[in-house]
Amino acid sequence: MTEIERKNLIVQACDARQHAHAPYSKFLVGAALLTESGEIIVGCNVENGSYGLTICAERVAFGTAVASGHRRFPALAVATTGGHAPCGACRQVASEFCKDLFVLLIDADHPDRAVETSLAELLPGRFVFPSE
Ligand code: THU
Image (cartoon, rainbow, N blue to C red; front, side, top):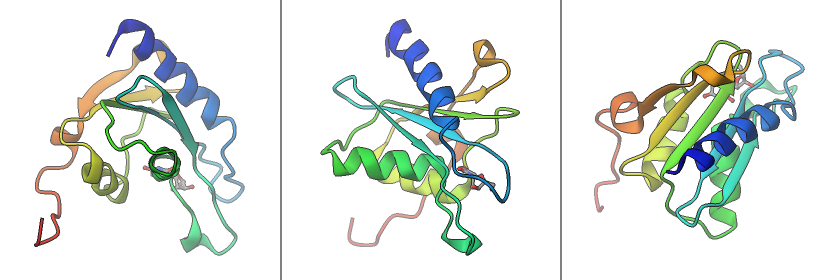
């Protein structure tokens, strides 16, 4: 990932966060996914009055990217207040497409202080379908 891609990923994750539909938790999440070809696909959390139907920002980004024909992703940025890490479900979904995913955790109030981690660090022992 280039320095420009890294900066764009952070900006776009923060921008996508502003589109979050989170009237219940009020916890806004933005995700920006870098594709192998250098495009950036974003997602935000989309909550529902039937709480269990809520979709996380990261899974919205993965679903949108896959629907556009992308399958490989070198990096993901997630923006929240506080710079929180993705939930377990999103880590598992990411692992379907990413053997080696670089992850940037962004505190939306301090986007210049992104914390760097990786899917390998966040999700050891992912579930793999037996026939894989
Ligand atoms: N959320 C995400 O968007 N991504 C995560 O990885 C964890 C949680 C959302 C779901 C819900 O709208 C809100 O944050 C509070 O759980």
